[in-house]
Length: 184
Ligand code: ADP
Image (cartoon, rainbow, N blue to C red):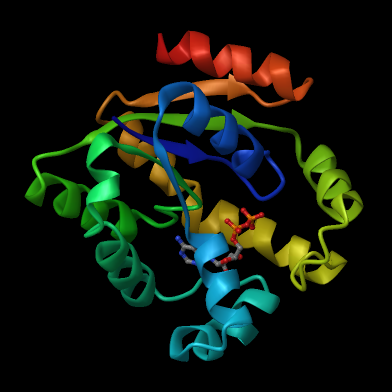
C-alpha cells in the first residue's frame, strides 16, 4: 500500500507519517530527510542542493525523481510506503505514477493535511529543529512555492479520486485518528 502524505510546510507531514508507518507497517520515505542527510554527508547531491533548500526553493524534478527511483529499488519498499514531501510538482507526480506502474504498484490515497497559513508559520518558527530553511524568509518562500508549484498536485490526484482531505488542526492523536478513519 502506497500513501502520499501531502500538505504545506508545517502541516505535520513528518509527524503523521511516523505514526502511519507504525500503524500500517509501511516504510517511510521523506525526500526532505534524504536531502538533509545528503547535505550532512556532503555527497555530490548534497553539495548541489544545499543553497536551493536553504532558500526554500524546490530541487529540480530530475534530481528528485532519480533519487526516489534509486531508493525504491530496495526490496524493503515492496510492502508499501508512506511518501512524505514527494511528489511535490505535477511532473514528479507523473514520473512517480509511471515508476510505480513499472513495479505493478500504484498510489492508494493522498492524505491532504489542511492547516491555516498563520498556524503554519507559527508552527515552523517555533519548532526549533535547527533547520537552516526554518527562517522567516525561508518559510515565506516555501509557502509561495507550495502554492505555485505543489498545490496543483492535489488536482492531479483528485482527478484519480485519491484525495482524502484531513483537518490538520488539533492534537497529534486527533489528527491521526482522522487519518485512520479516512484510510478505513
Ligand atoms: P517542508 O515540507 O517543511 O518544507 P521538507 O523536508 O519536505 O519540508 O522539504 C524541505 C526542502 O527540501 C524543500 O523546501 C525543498 O527544497 C527540498 N525538497 C524536498 N522534497 C522535495 C521534492 N519532492 N521536490 C523538490 N524539492 C524537494
